Amino acid sequence: MGAFAEFERSLIRERQKEGIALAKQRGAYKGRKKTLTPEWAAELVERAGSGVPKALLARDYGISRETVYQYLRQTKLE
Image: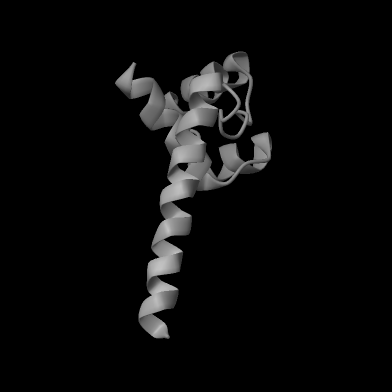
């Protein structure tokens, strides 16, 4: 019975991947909206560059520290 359940689960995952791929092609699967506007993100990067602590930035913008670091990494890549 366990082998049958594993096989069934693999079929479900395969169909799910196909559905997500089709949705991405249609443009319906875009992911989550960005928390900060581009202007706020630029301001955040500027303030971080001037030495403001990341925890303070996170509190000011209402986001987590990890999100602050993600915005900083994103601007370095561009």
